[in-house]
Amino acid sequence: MQKDKWLIYNELAWLEPIIAPPEKHTDETEIYCKAIKQHAKIEPQTLLHLASGAGINDYTFKKHFQVTGVDISEGMLEVARRVNPDLTYYFGDMRTVELREQFDAVAVPDALGYMTTLEDVRKVIQTADRHLKPGGVLLTVVQLKEEFRENNFAYTGSAGDVEVTVFENNYIPDPAGNIYEATLVYLVRKKGELEIYTDRHVGGLFKLEMWLDLFKEFGFEMKEERLNKLYEPYILNEGELPLRMFGCIKK
Image (cartoon, rainbow, N blue to C red; front, side, top):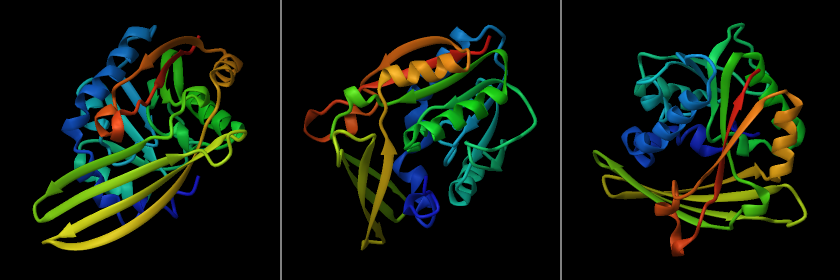
């Protein structure tokens, strides 16, 4: 995971609420909240959001839970604290962070894709398990290797005198491997003056069987749900983005 080298998590972090305004992600986050409440064996009141980014999901999470966020990007944490000044955020790596506290729920809704090895995935799940109360829920959303699509995306947004367009291309460099590339081009106009940035992210791809085996390894009771159409509005040429949401209940 190289967030220290990726523009969107550093000098371009301020663009995140423009590209992805919190209110536009309310419906998505409400799906996660509903799943947490449905699957938890205890009343979920506190939530730990690992890799909380710019706090976009937290804008809605906090309507249901007392939220604590953790992220490895200082740029994203700075934005998150502006978006949600009423929440507590910590700097930390979701593979190793230790808050010495347990929560009713742990959410990793969009960051496990940055783990490119099974060992790193295992470390994140171990972190979640360590911070989760018995009866609590680990909620995560992933792309499965067998369902992955090489999509192209376009995102737009504006705020004041800033206009942003982002193009993203997803590509599998080696079909036999476990990674994909997300190459992004940012067109940023400030008062009409154009600046162009490029960014290349690397993500992991693992099969459903691997995910189920890992969750079983930690003794979680599993609930699985397909999530479609969350990002289809941003896909060019009518592509699809099949996602799986796992609700992992700690016994």
